[in-house]
Image (cartoon, rainbow, N blue to C red; front, side, top):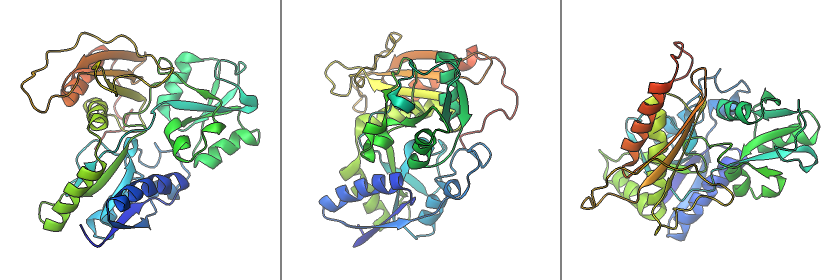
Length: 339
């Protein structure tokens, strides 16, 4: 590894908190790390994500800094990364995931069930909006942008009755006390990769130092159960050709009874899975079976499907194929691609 690792990060409070978490683990392993703030298009614009390009608007500038040699590694929220491979770059490590559920921040300490009919609830996510429409069609969903403080401020200053945020972000910022309700997975599935980080660097195909960095990051930071889960979730997104702003939700979890990662988060029971496919026990890369739960609202009728299997990518593709076979025709240009 280089004497000083330049870690590229967005400058928001959440992004720097996430990047500092990664940096501290690298420092504990004996490496010198400095944070380099990189301004992205998603930070510069207040327009909705679908208007400014959707998938990748937070990642493009960080990836450009990596390719140009301005930074040595970058930390992303994995849910913001396009599913298509990025030439010359590689996700070297996926650290252990935070609780991926969503939370409500509402006036007067209200839960989602207790919000009165006609209440306004803010989110910038079509995924959340689509699932809210199923759970509480009597609420009025308002499109919002902004950092955590801005979004919570809409409630605090009376502009909205509630907002929905990722629990992982509040946890990393030490602000879980702001949440008034944790939304169960039976009601609100997360975005593919939500709660997980991606540590990206140059692929190292033409540089010995880049190759060493890639290996070192994986050894220090990689959490295999999280990698397998997010691989399955992102495989669904890729097969559906849906970007991070599309109304697609997915969560994969290990279902092996001997795995500490097999149990869902507290208060979050998963629907029953379809029978698991056969796993080749001789395959040294095979892990415990995964249960993959997916929600899509790309056609006229929202769909949800749960299936189990041992191969993350194959499982994700199979679930996507099943859902596509049940979807109504989608008008051209109605969702962004994952490229």
